Length: 176
Image (cartoon, rainbow, N blue to C red; front, side, top):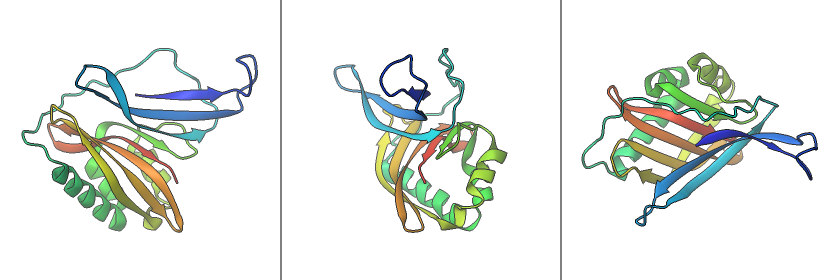
């Protein structure tokens, strides 16, 4: 789930003091209860808060015997290409239906905007995956870890979705 959040200092009557976008990865436990695995977000300027939840529907293709190593290899391939040709990596690995939550910016779903946001910083970024979670159906995976930007070490979250054309990035949260 992802959505806009307005923080107010003491009451709902106050003007918002900050604006954020949250992203939470959920998973059902053995009792059938939804529990969150990862919660991450970024701040940005004011945006209109949508009162209606939207669902992205896209055909996913389950993978038999999906392993963490498969996703780690995918992350390494993306990161390696990103370090030498960010625009090419973005075109190759981002889904046609994706969301990017990039520090200081409202959500984007445009490849051109993603490339513009990463263009000034891509050569200074490196990714360190720390945790990989796999969906039981084998059609999605989440990767969270550190993103290094010069001497800064922040966090990132990437949701991979297996589509008819292969593994694609469905959602990314980048804190730099």
